[in-house]
Image (cartoon, rainbow, N blue to C red; front, side, top):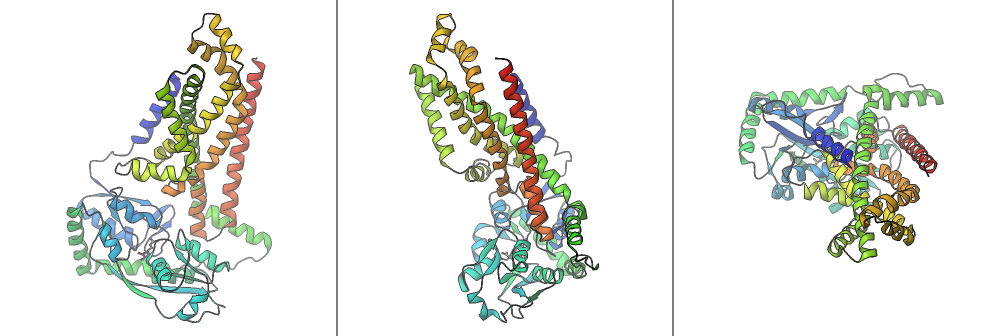
Length: 484
Ligand code: ARG
């Protein structure tokens, strides 16, 4: 128990410390970095028109800029709930959004275009009614298609929608013009329809409570507009993304091995993309390990309270609390719990996401562990407790020395099962934009538009982890048997 406390303490210190070394205030910008030329990832860095503009303004206002990548449908909420200072993500100004956040002066005019395959029958926008259309979830393209054309297929980011189009899974993608041009340039076999669906303006979003930042930001933005600096930045990124093609213009090797080799290189080696998997793996391991500990602690406590109440009729209130906890936790999906803990419970505090995940998965796992252990305690013959008591041991002592050790041995396989489930369940961490192993694969997928290698690699790594974990549990079981 003592060790557990120490470990948890160390964890909290580890996760909370280590950031704020400098005295300058931080400006946290959120974005969805899969939207070239506005924001995209290059060699692990988030770059593009938006980061560059915001960085320039932040520099002049004396801030240190920090950028966080998340799903587009979360960026406005992040600003609104105070999780971030500014959202810069090619965000179109709309009346609905204006109710939630303040917008700076606009910096770009944009439009929505339609991408189809070269050989598509779709020739103009009126042909769209009867074909499947992909959009990025939560964008103005999504709203437009939903309201005016038909129910679209919603993807978490633009490259995934374009990949589905290339693969023939959908017939069209509706998306902002500049990213559309970049995607069409990068992939052969795609073309744009000539007419635009909408005209819009982009601006940066700032919380309604932060009027001061809005004013200062607008002033700098205006200066950049007037001096021509803004156009320079925009044109720079537009032309840079002009010259890129999928494989840098090299001649593709069409043989099977050649294709495998080049996809492997593209997905893992180029721009050191394997690092996404490594970082993700590290977070997955951290989350699993510490939530497992929390789960065991909670689970033991709850199980002891529940079985004590069952057997002795005491601890009525605590027993009620435990039952309530079990009902809530086992009655709702872990993803929803994770989202509630992140956006509601810790909604207004700046807290490390890994810590949030550890808490969420720990609390969740505790409920299952509790019932497993209770089952174990119940399975021990009543006579054992009676024997303990008649030897002069107290209830707690008999529990600790006689019942729990035997129960633990009996439930080890079921517990092992729970740990394996927990490890794999952490893969939903991506919902709070946490970079876990699964998300690592997603990031690669959104950059390379390739599904096969990133997904298989992620699956293999989980598989290895589970095999290792099962092996360790098997060893523990054997050990315990020997001690019998
Ligand atoms: N302009 C569109 C909107 O505001 C799409 C923006 C998507 N941005 C992104 N970084 N993925 O809804």
